[in-house]
Amino acid sequence: MDTKKYLGARIQEIRRSKGIKQSELAENLGIDPKYISKIECGRCFPSFELLDKISQVLQKPVSDFLSVEHLQSRSTLLETLMLKLNSTSDDKLHSAYKILNEIL
Image 1 (cartoon, rainbow, N blue to C red):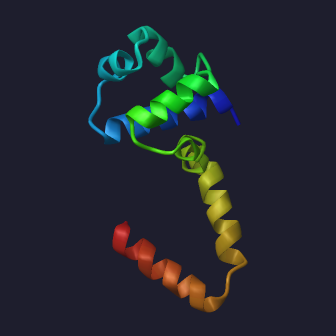
Image 2 (image 1 turned 180 degrees about the vertical axis):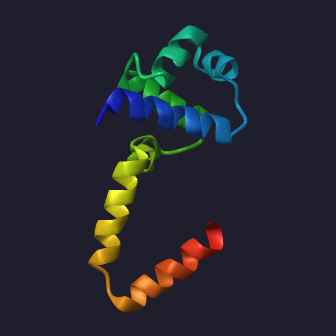
Image 3 (image 1 turned 30 degrees about the vertical axis):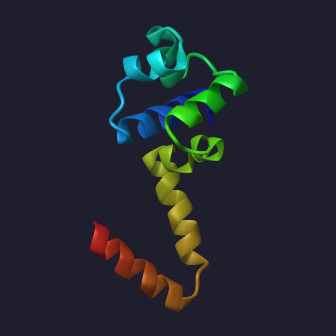
C-alpha cells in the first residue's frame, strides 16, 4: 500500500466532499497551494501538525484521514469482499445482498 498516495487521496476526497478548493484549503492553513497539491497527489507527507490543522479546517478527526481501505484497487476490493462474504453466515449474506442490491 502506498501510504502517501492513499493519505493524499483521502484528504482530497474529504476536501471535495466539503466543497472546498485546494487554494481555499491552503489559504486557511497558511501554506502554498502547490504543497496541498503535492500532498493530495501522494508526492509529500504532511507533518502531523499540518494533518491536525487540515482536520480542523475540514472538521474531521485525524482518524478519518487514515481510513483508506476503500481507496484500494478494484481487484483488491473485490477479493476482500469475496473473502468476507464467503465466511459470513447465511443471514448476514442475505442482508448484505439486500443492501448492495439497493445501492447498486
